[in-house]
Length: 270
Ligand code: FPP
Figure 1 (cartoon, rainbow, N blue to C red):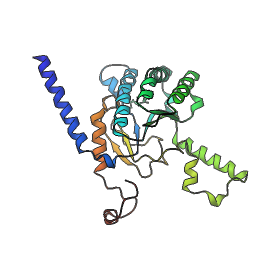
Figure 2: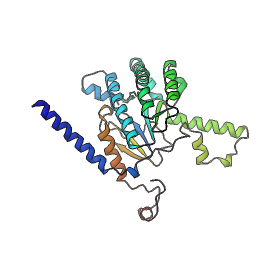
Figure 3: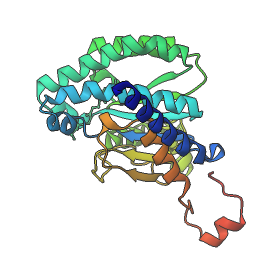
C-alpha cells in the first residue's frame, strides 16, 4: 500500500516535470545561465543541523542542475561557489567548504568527462589552498577537450576585483603603447575580464529569497534577466530550473528598444 502510494506520487511529480518541460521552447533557451546558490546555511539550520550540512546537500543540487543544463543543451553555466567575502566566515566553515570542493571535484570528474562537460574557473585562483588548485587544474585538463556544457565555477570571486584587474591590465597596455586610450571600448574591456571567452549570461538566478547581486558578474549581467526564488539552494532541482526557464521565456527582452520595435524586428539576442 505504502509502495503503491509512493509510486503514484513519484509518477505525479514526473508528470508535472514533463509538463513544464513540454512548455519550454528549446529554441529560446539562454546560452548562459548564472546562479547565486544561496540558502545552504538556512536550509541546514531549519533542520536543526550545522550549516556545513547545507553545503553537502547543495552539492546534490549542483549535480542535478549541471546534468539538466547539459540535457537541455545550455552552453554555459556559471555557479557562484565561493566569494572573496566568504573568506571572512568562521574558519571551520571555510575549511569544510574547501574540503567539500576538493572531494566533489575528485568524485565527479569522471562523470563530467563522460557527460561532455568542460570545467572552467574564474576568480582569484591563487588564493585557494594548493590542494584545491591542484585538483581543479587536473579536472580542467581532463575535461579540456569536452564540447558540451561549459561549467564555470566562480571561486574566491569578486566582480569588483575583476573590474579593477581589467582596468589595471588595460592601463599597463596603454602605458607600454600596446593600446591607445581611444581604442578602449566595450569589446576591448570585455576581453580583459576573467570571462573574456564566454558570452554574457542572459539569465541570472538567485535562490533563497534575497534580491541582491552580491558582487557577482556586475559587468556581464547588464542585460540579464534576474530571477529570484525563495527556494533554498539544496531544494533547487530540475523542476525549479524549468520554472525559471519558463519565466525567462515569458519576458520581453527589449534592450532599450520599444515593445513595438521588438515585435516587428528580428531580435538580436534571442
Ligand atoms: C551560499 O549559502 C552558499 C555558499 C557560500 C557555498 C556554495 C557551495 C556549494 C553549493 C557546495 C560546493 C559547490 C561546488 C561547486 C562543489 P549560504 O551559506 O550563504 O546560506 P545562508 O545564506 O542561508 O547562510
